[in-house]
Image (cartoon, rainbow, N blue to C red):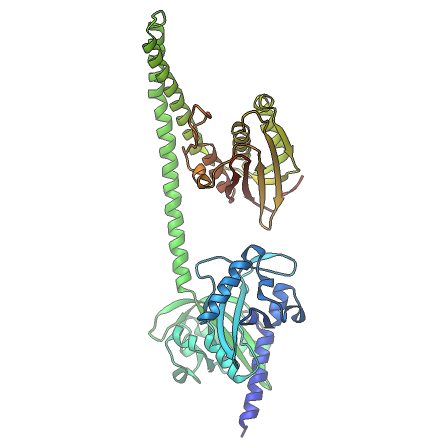
Length: 503
């Protein structure tokens, strides 16, 4: 008969083994955010050794732009700690030793070690879909606390397929209490009937031949609830050994909500796609059909001009000029709207040398550059994969604005640069023009929004809306940073692709 110390020692060794061999990355931090423990998979995932991680702040593994907000959330978490997914509904990112930023899913757990408050992070690199759960710490009490805080079901079976470990989350997911299910065969409880024979055969094959068809792999399958309901789960099975006894632990997550969310998202995306198609068709048809009445108005205005050509009625001439100006402006608005609706209609990705594109735009703007005595500084730009016509229009609109909105009596100075980011290119076009008040920074990208009268600056107010749509076509975004009276800095991004490079 084993005494309690022997049992405790065996459990410690078993859970140490689980911790060391887990295929999911695990980090433990104290209330100050300092890392106290990390498993080998965390070392592999982040590229740091155990010695390099221990005692370091957890923000070491957070991308630079997110560090401050992470510290804030960490402090808030320890005020009311509980087991929960981190950043629910948001994209989370981590950073390894080489500076690589990658998406992750994180589940948080909490326990006390004496008077210390400890947080446990279960981290999965979802870019490669490697996922597993692990049991942390080396004492029976600590392990119990961690298992109870885990958001995933942890189910262990022996080589006969009988359940030996069943954590609280397993009770929640499957509806069985630990006392009801412990010792029962896994295939007779939570495995749907259509998979039971496969499960039994796979278990026997692994024990006999060590063939690993599903071991240490992330699997999506359906499981069976106590009430007979089948639901989708994601699981990883890890083989374990305690002294001379082999057993298996499965880390199981109910992904019903994720599947439903994906379905809703797909339905929404399809609905949005259809509405965008209808909207583009409407804009195209409406713009095209408006051309005809405008031509009619212009024709009659010309007739009026000829009729009153030899008459000295200043009012009639003035009114005719008003009509002519309004008709011309309406024609430009309609044409701009027509161009806007056509953006991205025939999208073909191709290599684009941004240096050549900017040179072409500058050549087209030669008269405006000479007239304003503008000085253009152009850094080396990359070759990207994009849509040639749209990219040229993007540069042309931004450069035209820098030339147009210059300070009176001062030649424009325009600088064009680009820098590589992790997954995108970031371009900047800076000028020394009149600038834009911060309260208008978002408004200027809305179609037909103007900050000046047509007498001050010509235009229809659609150019920056074009720019916004073009950057979105390239999976990017556009924004402005400006100081009134000193100039503006327009930034836009374009997603990187494998064929992108510096010229």
